[in-house]
Length: 520
Image 1 (cartoon, rainbow, N blue to C red):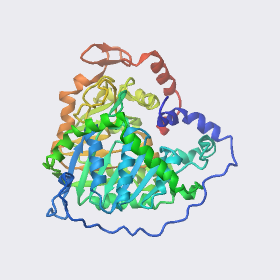
Image 2 (cartoon, rainbow, N blue to C red; image 1 turned 60 degrees about the vertical axis):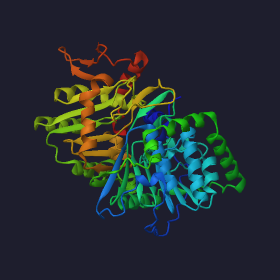
Image 3 (cartoon, rainbow, N blue to C red; image 1 turned 30 degrees about the vertical axis):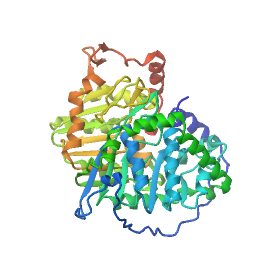
Image 4 (tube, one colour; image 1 turned 90 degrees about the vertical axis):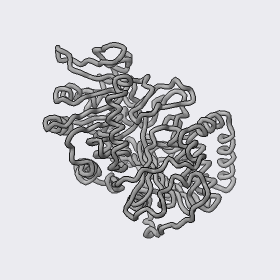
């Protein structure tokens, strides 16, 4: 069954048409404004805990930030658990997708334990892909755990009605991914919460990238989270008319999560986590020390979804992201799983190539993508990009080493690979890590977030991937003598999208004829 984001993207044209024919259904109830945030700085004494190795030294200068790249799915989950266990006062989480699977359940289990020891837990989830009202209402019954839903559906048991009657609103989503612990440590990047992001899905492994951050940049992320939390678009569950769950409901979910944590599936995954490089380093109290580097937070504000797409483009994070990455002098390396440059983007990349900048792009092949509609919107630009001198690569579905330079490991070991990292490196000096795809949806419709890190090692590593791994893990596109496309790889050359099958190629071709690019 296609995942919900894919279903939404595929159904956009039909939903938009039907929505214009139906009127008169009730919308969201009024949202009572919150009092001003009173989040204070938290001072915590250092502990003799292996996870303390993640923190920046206390004597670090006030303006310093530190960063650790999380390019392995197992490490990425270990880091999130470490932040939850480190927290003494508060935990703030912001996610687009939270699946009700092994890793999703394990993380809720950890958060409940944090709430039990007195940590204030706030979880803000986009309502499109949350794990279910029943689970959330039960968790929300804990006195130290509060959940809110961003831009929620008004019809809780018949969401399709919102798609027909309020499509313009529900098409605007919160795509951010963030964990904050005590205002001292944060994780931001491309990963949602689910088995396919953390190496626990035997069938699908997303190649993805996060950054663990500490230091001076943290107040910017905390302030942005607070702006989202108190936004009129973020609804407490009670404001949606959901009845407060009884204590028995919380006890029932706690028992379910404890059983999941003790299940054979979870046991196998936890055993794998214990061997993850970050877990080993933490046990040795050796800290894979966070690298010191200037870091800038680049985040959308929640009111972006109130603005017309053209105004959202101008006022959103894209212009600030470009400004933080400039100047472009020698090399631009782009990794975007959903890459729809549009005519303006093609022209800008062509201008950079003309000025002497080497531009390399990696995106999903049709066989590797999880959203064929986005590939259909991207495909018509391939010839123009190649003609302009852009080097274009498409990830193979059997890739065993992602652009984050780590094998997208899973318990099964033979899963299909798909690109999900959203990262940009400039001149081997600056790198962006976040949730922003280079497509119209990220630029104009969704809210996004991330960080620009001025550090040579991660920036150079990303660009080096194109030299060392791309020829083995991806197909390079080139223009054939007859003007068509060729896919060149270590096995053979192709004249149509490799390994995609006739049905997927046909679907992509049909979707490319539809006027849906602006919604991709």
